[in-house]
Length: 405
Ligand code: F3S
Image 1 (cartoon, rainbow, N blue to C red):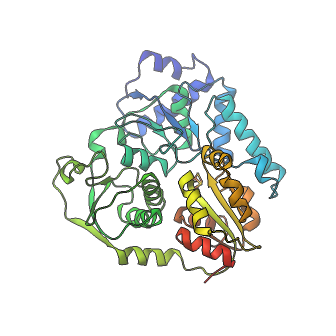
Image 2 (image 1 turned 45 degrees about the horizontal axis):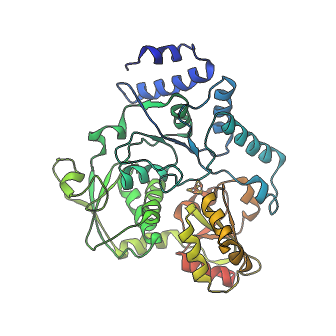
Image 3 (image 1 turned 90 degrees about the vertical axis):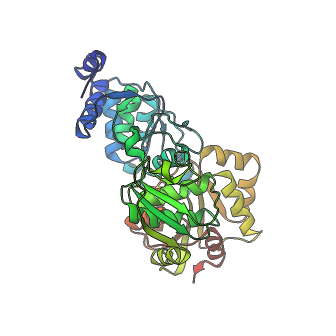
């Protein structure tokens, strides 16, 4: 792997151990994937998780004097000021959250605490080389926007932020962005929930390959639809790049999606029944619920408005906590426009900066939770809380009744 003289100097430690460690990480990654060189990036995003390993890595770089040359935006962990008014955490959990915020502040990160940076807060342009971690953000920036990022870890994305470069391999290279398999879709796509279930199906079929979707009916996905699709394709599979023929920017035609390669026969046809069957495997739980959790990935302002419309003045059942996790700007906008206050009167709370997979939610574990996101259900179940899945209207009706039939 070619390194410039300046990159070799950093690797030799001439600019301090923090930058040296970051360069070691990028060099090792490049060697592993046979990258020929490093390329500059002007945009990075780190899936800061508030977990010990990620925080350790950031502190290691900070203690070695590193500061980001391309400051990354950051994923959420949890709002320690607001959520401790409601829920208990241990001193160790609180201390880890505090350390995490401090380490990322010191390294110069932009503390957006938002997991859909491609929708707002850190939006790349077509063809831009970037280094993004967060499994739902990567398919969005590659597929929906046509920017170029590998599926970075928080470790490699932070290293890219420090050095301002990333190894040139994978989805940075034209050949690796072409479609690998064709999936025909013959189903009605009404709302982002349907796109999420479609993504879940596609991820299971495609694994880590690049799927090309060809729709029988006319579809017109919006940002939340792309986001839900990619989030779920990266949950059931490891999809980081996809094409939708006639829709996404690198697939104006099916020929373009396959980059001139022979167009294969369809690997699968996904129908309305396929989606319903997939949904049935994810929604088996019923009974009394204690939590409804929306916003995995983070809700936008228009999704928050839709929650209010569906409640139509009715109130959440007394024994149910109803939380919307949103981008901080959307939460602030909701506050300024009094949407937040109106929803609170109905028993709906919202919080920024926060992920569903954090210790602040542990008091709900052991009882049934409900969400509109397969990704949320997947991660919460790993934490020990059974979860059910419904489209948003179903989540609202169950929250009012306090149970899921
Ligand atoms: Fe965001 Fe956490 Fe879900 S980072 S996508 S809320 S698992």
